[in-house]
Image (cartoon, rainbow, N blue to C red; front, side, top):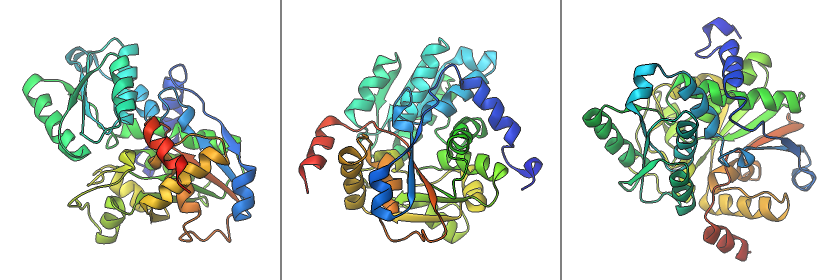
Length: 325
């Protein structure tokens, strides 16, 4: 792969990692013996649920706010989020002493809203979905003059997220396959751009909720498509329309996209908690759900990394999932 032709070259991803190293955790990529035995492959888990905000979104936000100009910083920042991006932005804003407003949909988990408030951001609850919240946030941006920070559709955000890919290859250099969730595509864009500029033969597979397959439908159509709804328990990937920036990156650098059911994601949350002793939200567990979906050909992949993208699940939801067998 020619680095110079990449939307975000390796140098920019490495610079982003340097920019954020004092603000985010270098999360571990651990070997899971229980999961490895279940699929007869070497399974590793990239634990972004151990990130400072318990989700990978802290990375892109830390990089983006580091790169804002004086005028942009003065205006304060605003965004829409289903929760994890808002957590990342609010923490980065607090550390940079910036005013932050986060618009969340009605379905945003209470635990995420609570932690965003703890970071000092103003919370506005608006609309049934992430896309509804985004529309309202853009209206406020125009009316009040705030600086809008995209959840996923921004090359600086993607570069920050690319630090995950660098860490995966440093920890598991013989990785054959990475499985990662897809919402708007910012996380998997960063990961795939990083790893494929180092190891072009690497396979990267994305996972969407069967009830919100916006990226998969868009790739199949050859253009960005908006779904009529994105009704999924996995709020972290409940996106009706992928990004204009992320769409062409995913189309070129992600090898396959699969979908998983609500039941499979809940089962994966339970499996991670009981077998891997890891707490994941539904979106974070989607990669493990895909591992057991029979939709991925594991024959050529000996060493597999599943990205556990976040762990911000409401306690009541977790207890309910753990009760069911």
